[in-house]
Length: 155
Image (cartoon, rainbow, N blue to C red; front, side, top):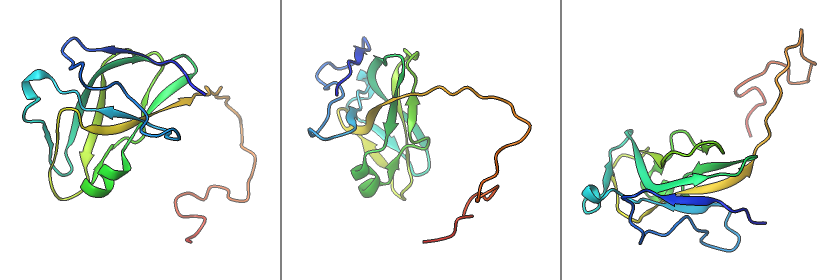
């Protein structure tokens, strides 16, 4: 199954940086790349441990109604460098038309420098169901009840 996502490059964006693309036939996520403004392309973006930085992609997207774009970490960057998204998955709503930036953090102990064109995250397109929230006087009982974090045990 495929779905058309309209993509607009920012006026300053480097057109040599590929649009989001899937690395393999079975990939669920399309790779997003850092598309840095001209004034910082040579030095890249350094992210210190436990700091947050929005890394630009140089893109804007039009997600069709009924879908969202989920921004997820790349597993290799997480394993090798501790690079992750503090709000994973990030959500791009179908009615958002602003710049597509990726909020990144380093959960390791060493700073990470991202370079112009680096693959920085994955975009997964997913269907959205909007619920209708209805007030009630009480909820149906379940075996779990109000048991929260850790209430179902370990292992």
